[in-house]
Structures are given as C-alpha cells and as structure tokens.
Image 1 (cartoon, rainbow, N blue to C red):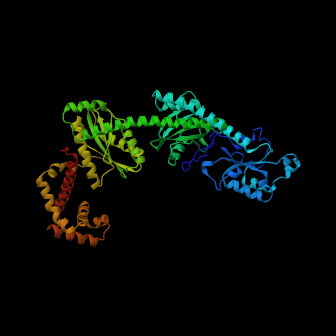
Image 2 (cartoon, rainbow, N blue to C red):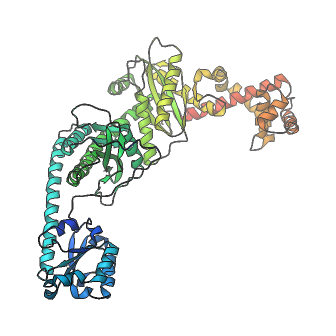
Image 3 (cartoon, helix red, strand yellow):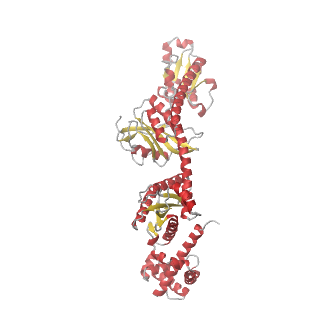
Length: 586
C-alpha cells in the first residue's frame, strides 16, 4: 500500500480528477505500424482521446462538443509556408486532438528534407500541444480513417462486453433480493478493492473491506464522500460517469475514491465508491470505473425497492400513531388488529412525547429525508418496555410513543425525552423542544399523554420553559385545568383582561408590562430592567393599567387577580386549540 497522504481537513472540498474511461488515445494510434515514428510536434497532447477521423475539407468552424476527439487528415500542401501556422490554429479551434499530414512522394524520398519541413506549422503545433504527424504518401484518408474507426470500435466493443458481464453478475445478485450489502460484496469482488455505499446524509449503507473479514468503513473516506454528496448532480439522460476524487489518507494508507452517484427518478440519493490504491494502473482503473457505474445503476434499483417498502411501512405506522394519539379507534378489536402489526401492546404503559424542531421543518427533499432519519433514530433509543418505540410525523412535529416499565419512576419519561432530543438534534440542523405527558396504560393512556404533551408544548412557547419539559412541570397550569375548562373561570378571565386589552389596543404592551411587574414581585425598577424601559415610562404604563381595570395594580390582591386571569386565559386558549384539532372527524 502506498504511503498515507495525510489527514483530510474538514473544510477540504474533494476534487474530482476527471473521467478516465478506457478509450483510445492519440498515443495508441501512433503506436500502430501505419503511424509509428511519424510524430514531429505536439508531444504534450498525445494523451487526448481520439474518436473520429475527418478530412481537412470537412472540418467545421468552431468546436462541436458532439464531435469531440477529432483526428484531422490533411495534405501537406495546405501547411507549407507561413500559412501553415494559421491552419494549425484553425484545426485546434475546431476541437481537433491530432493533425495527420500526408506528404508528397518527393518529401518522403528525402529524409533531410523532412527535418526542415513545415517549420511554421511545427512551431504552432508545439505551442498549441496539438500532435502533428507526417505520414507517408501511401497513407491516404481512407486507410487512416479505417484504422481509427477499427481501433475505436474494437475498444468500445471490449468495454461493452465487460460492462455486460459486470451488469449480469450484479443483476443476478439483485434478483436474489439479498440487499445492498450483497451488491457491495459483488462489486468489491470484481474490483478487487474495498467498496462503499453511502446515502446523501453520510450514513454507510454497506461496506465491503475486500479482505475477507468485517471491517468498519474508513471514517476519513466517509467524511469526504459526505462533503462530495453536496456537490453531486444527476446528468441529463440519467447516465452517470464515475469520477476519481483526490487521494484520501486512512490508517491503512492512501486510497483514491472512484465514485458514481446513485439516482432514483432523476434525483441523487447516494454514492457508490470503490477505494483504489494510488498506484492503480490505467487498465485496472478503467475496469473499476465500469464496476462502479454498473453498480450504481443496480444499487439504485435496490434502493428504489427498499424505499417503496419503507415508505409504505412508514405511512402505515404513521397512520396508526395518528389514530392512536387522537383516540380514533372505534372498538378494541380494531385496535388489536392494527396494534399486532406494529408491536403495540395494549396492556403496556406508554408515554407520548412531542418534538418541535427549531427552525421548523421545510418541505425540500433533503430536509424531509433528515426528518425521516430523525424519526428512525428516535425509534432506536434504549428503553425499558417490551414493546417497540413508535415515531411518526404529525404536522411539523415528531410524535414519539414509547413504552415505560410498570415499575418505572417519574424520571424515566424525562430520561426518554432527553434521549429523543439528543437523537433528533443529531439528525436535524438547529435545536428541538421536547414535551411529554404523564405515562398511561394502553391506547387511552397514550391519547391522554399526547394531549398533555401538546398542552405542555403550547404552554412552553408562552412561558420561559426548559427545552425538555413535562406536563407535570407546569404545575400551576395543571392546577388550573378545571378552572380553565369551566364557564365561571373563563368569564372571570374575560372580565379582568377585557378592560386591559381594550385600553391596550392590538399590541398588548400594557399586558406585558403588568405581567413583568408581577413576575418581579412588584419591584418597579426590576420590572423596568426586564422590559428595557425607563422607570418613569414603566410607572406611567402601570398607572394606565390601574385606570383601565379600575383597581390599584400595586395591590397584591389585584396583582393576583391579573396573574390568575392571564393563566386561565392562556390555558383556555391552548385547550380550545387542542379540542379543535383532536375532535373526531364528523
């Protein structure tokens, strides 16, 4: 193995080293007996790929990408004298990769003449790095073009035959339905080097070490592929060319990732790579390129199959979770029939957690994929219950239904909430607020726990609450639950707050001032600092509050009345919103 290229910095962007498919180069053509020892200029350009041969008379003005790799055949009369340099530049501008000049019989008969022939054209060819060859008079266009066509077609046939062999081998693995790891194993066996499959989030889907034993994927390579995935796109027509990235240092030595994107429906969904040694030969690299490109196509088909199954399962599980937390099961038999499929045990105790990402989840494909990964990460957290954890997206939130042991203490739901918050934030950018209700038995307890979690989440937005909060943490609101649900309690809140809000207008600045004043236990200076207002401005607004409600706000009884009315009104608003959401459909 070659010496390591050193660690890869996190800010490095992996650079592609270009397509190196097994093709015919100008060097290959010049090695043929008919063209051997004819090169007189432009040696630096002999690595260019040759695909066609055309006469000078048919050369179009300007380079045409569809006719890349042109070899131009020209008579020597067109390149004699100072005009030869201009013609060379025209040939280069047309996209030619080589210029083959057919000499006159008199020129080929005098070697001393050849050494001095076409000095202007030779100089221009060296400057433009255009291979210029002087052919004998018998090398007419027909014979030269036949040579180029035969060479290119033979090479293309060889590549197609090898591609077909690779495709059939991997196709047999795909037909057995053994999954992505088996396909990666087949790729590694044919390439003779490690193979790696990752998704666009950098998760390793399969790794074959090519050493006959299980080994972890090199973390340095995974990081490089993850960064490269941000730049990858799918070419028009769906054909994906493999590219070689810059060497990556690993503990076992430096490797060159040969990468091809995996696409589903025209959208990239992952990367396939084989890890070549840095001293790989051109022939081995070309064969591995075919393996990677064919492997990417078949792994894409397997990913599509897996995605279809996964999405169907996720939709079914999501529908079950939604019906479960909303209490929509008509009877116990309906619950049992669906619970058995998802592993939900009606006799188990469950706690429901609601995760609210910040910033909210958008609908772009990458964010949706990360949100789904967060749901799967939440389902894999450790827990004491015998039933599995269920997670599903509901609106912009993630709902998690987790079993808790029958002997669990009050700290287990909080520990679960913390673990869920950690797992979700590892998959999503930003932070997440997690609220949970009290554990309850079966479907009814799960629905009640969900309502409590949603209530806690809504209240947490209105008060200074911790990122992870339970319904019981908001004890004041819990104690006021029955008051907020009663007509007397709501009427009391309206009678106290209505005069204040009428005087306040739409901005409710007076209400925020009086609440800050109450939160600071009637300390005027502390309330002014909390609000960022001058002391006299705060005092003026408090006097307006007293006039609006007809009571002295400096009185502790009045402060308690306003505080109580505010809390009852907040809880009633949250409950009304949840009632509207959780009400069974008509």
